[in-house]
Image (cartoon, helix red, strand yellow):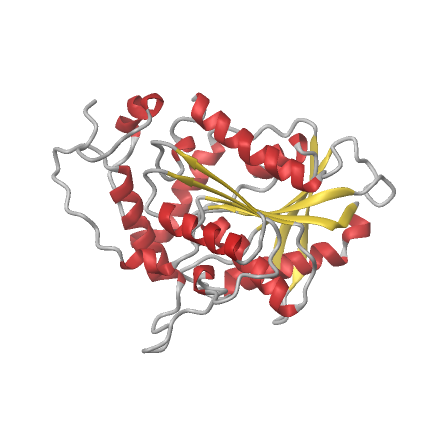
Length: 332
């Protein structure tokens, strides 16, 4: 298949370009989009070997409940009496609007739980557009507070709690780290952000015109998705005219990044979020925060969903996992 002009795709990924679907607006019927997503998840059950999980309802200030699912290594039968493990809060991606796993089926949480090992908490934060900012990020921060408060019961070492996520989940990880610093909240040992969506200004970038016969253009399709995500995540009429979104909505807007936990930032060459992610990493470095950065060459946003068995996808996952492991097990 011919590669669209101006797109330098990694040789291993060229055959997967044809699998890219044409862009369609997921918000045109968000309920149907979520149903299709859940149907895809249901086609193949996640591997739960070596892991057990339990769902909890965490009360919000308004009396409603936030659901989190906690995953433990299976040999941790009594979490409260076993040697404490590090914890990872996982905030799923999906444009702040989709991406929630089926109960007990969060693949990222399962893999981290097994491979680190760690107690992993999947957070079912409220989704846009029904629940716009700040609902989702406040849920994620509430999950952090709850995890720290329940550390002994959950078998967690409270000084070894990390946050992680891809895309929107990476943006939420950055925001929660800022919130914990500013509010004097629970200490975060590490913030791990993959292809993070953390700067609303990316949605101001004009969408290039493409001809119908040019073939799938992953960067343009992703940029359309970014435009739509921010349009539906931020409240209508927000921010007030003449002002900018605050840093918990768009972490790249934060004026001060000092005092934040060590970070990992992974970006992809053909992702419209790449430059914002690299800029955020550079600002963290300039603020004295230890940062590891990895750019995946010739890859597009969430390429591993289409090419999970490629060496590039496996290397990218291994690099991210190993740095998370090193941060949570510093003595190893």
